[in-house]
Amino acid sequence: MAIKKQSFDFLKTLAKNNNRDWFNEHKDVYTQAYNNMIEFTDALLVEMNKHDHIETASGKKGLFRIYKDVRFSKDKTPYNTYWHGHFKRATKQLRGGYYFRIEPGNSYISGGFWGPEPKDLQRIREDIEINHDDWKKLLANKTLVNTFGKMRGEQLSSAPRGFAKDSAAIDLLRYKQFILRHEFSDKEVLSPDFVYKANDVFKKLRPFFNYMSEVLTTDANGISII
Image 1 (cartoon, rainbow, N blue to C red):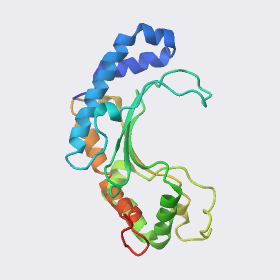
Image 2 (tube, helix red, strand yellow; image 1 turned 180 degrees about the vertical axis):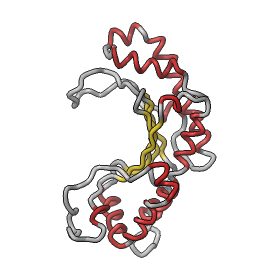
Image 3 (cartoon, rainbow, N blue to C red; image 1 turned 120 degrees about the horizontal axis):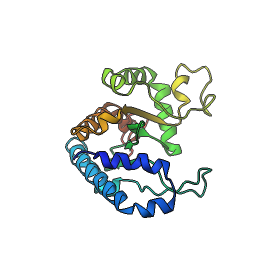
């Protein structure tokens, strides 16, 4: 299922008319675009379940609303000018989340750990400290580098509490998020086979997810905690 040009163009027009009156007058155009995105997300979910176990029940469940929560935002425009969604991996053994964003000039797929719980973040950092060489090897994986480049995410300005500032692993210990991201051109997004390209990029996250899942389901001695 391809993303239709009309669904993409709707976002461009919405960006120029981000107000409730215009949106309500063009609700039928929005509905058609939204239904197309549900179909795309459904098709992507089918492909992903061929190589992973996804908890998200349907494309509609995975697709975020276009309506913004502006209560705590300086930008009070009422609608997102992009489509975005996520898939959650099933069971406590499979860690990591999948995310996609479709926006003219800024479409991408990403995956990883956006807001690890404190105990999970501590466990990740302990593994980084002990197995720094393994982390370097993981992040130098040819497929990961060619697809995603460097790992992204918010970082502390200094060493986290309990870790030395001169640690050999300080470059990774400062991370608070652990995210990999791949950008797509508008032409790629609108290509008939984009659902397969998107699935392939998600699939290439697996070496990263497999390692992180092992870390987060075992203690420092490798004993299961699940």
